[in-house]
Length: 99
Picture 1 (cartoon, rainbow, N blue to C red):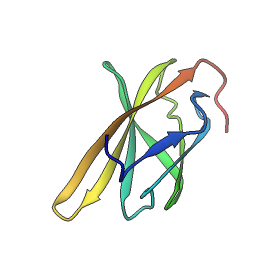
Picture 2: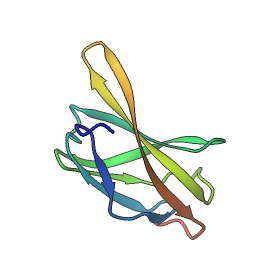
Picture 3: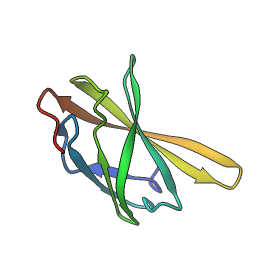
Picture 4: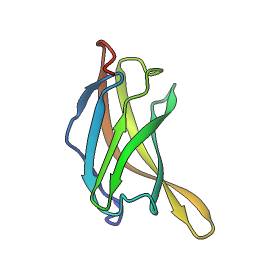
């Protein structure tokens, strides 16, 4: 487990369109450039709406169906980008899309 990029999700359950807040370390824009939600069959780029050193807020994409998704961070490195997967999951539930 990597301790330099830790995300702890406040909300383990969310619906499509909902805002989710994750807490951890090194989550500012200069470190984390994208956040991907993925499963064996589906991958979607989440829209990040707020970032601080210890906080990241993102919206569950409307393209996702109800399922359990892995959270993967795309981090910036001098030589390019790297995917950081710490086996953090979020369950997306069926429900109305929030605006």
